[in-house]
Length: 263
Ligand SMILES: [Ca+2]
Ligand SMILES: [Ca+2]
Image (tube, rainbow, N blue to C red; front, top):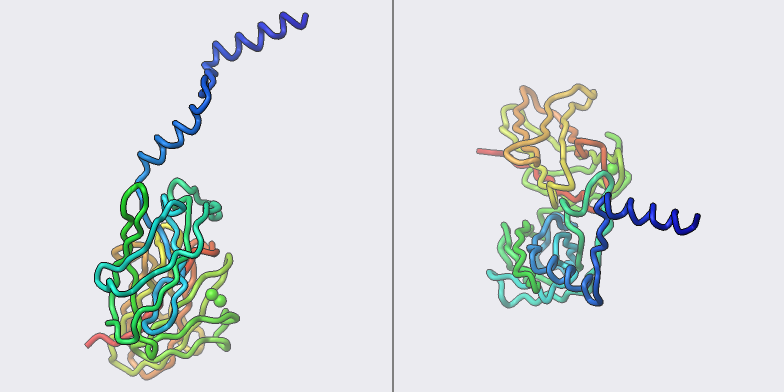
């Protein structure tokens, strides 16, 4: 009886095509080495979404092949030395797969000189699978604020000036970050939300007047990052609500909010 059962199990394996992957010692490691060779180093997200010149930065980067990263450098600021202080596997974010959003992450620490120009800075992370290239916005210390919770209600809104930016994060599901600024009648205003990684963070922005009346909203612009143009008929305070379009928040849902006048 036992022999008949054994034969049956064997038949199921053979007919079902269950051929064991490894038939010799070292096979698995050979497969893994082949996988690594075929994988491209790539960056999918950073936290925070922007960095500040003159201040020590701790930048968390997610992507592919980052656990094997050798170093990080800045081609346009070669004097800046970055130290990679942590490299590890990434857990899958809620509702997403690591094969899409990256399976590894690192932490790099560095300080940009105070006089470093505002704008986009390119960085390169070297890995055995090649270089991964990323871009991040550099802000001046006097033109940014860091979002702090609680700020989910109008009465808790962060006050912003035109031309200012806020580094924030949708830290958890259903988190909303509220900001307020004064707009003058006829001013052409531009509100942009740039995510730290749009594969993970699909940002949305909604505007209201002080009575809670809806003024305007934006979800996707040219990318998944929203861009909103706004012109008011009268002087008014404007409340901006930044959120995740699908109400999903978490570790990699960083963003940079900028409110500016377009002339
Ligand atoms: Ca938040
Ligand atoms: Ca909030």
